[in-house]
Length: 87
Image 1 (cartoon, helix red, strand yellow):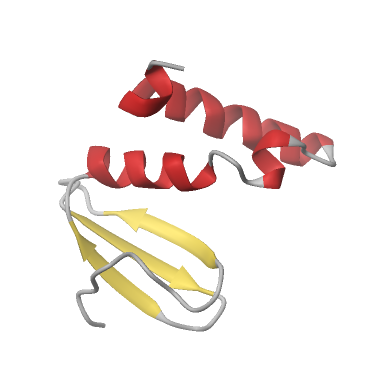
Image 2 (cartoon, rainbow, N blue to C red):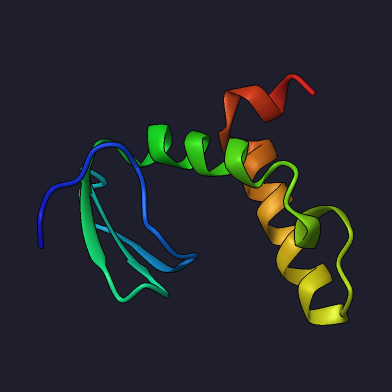
């Protein structure tokens, strides 16, 4: 597993895990790659929130399950992402 820059996979990211100290993120993708990212959880969460801002599931969920996930994602982004706090 290599330390990667920039935050990129060739397929959709299917899983993310933060290290207990918040300094590492490991992501797994549908392209079967696993990548490790150095940073802090607040910075990475801000990047993730900004990338999710216009995702169809966040803005137009098709099922109750998607709506619940979208609501949780929006609440998290509004609470922790500086860009979302001002909107």
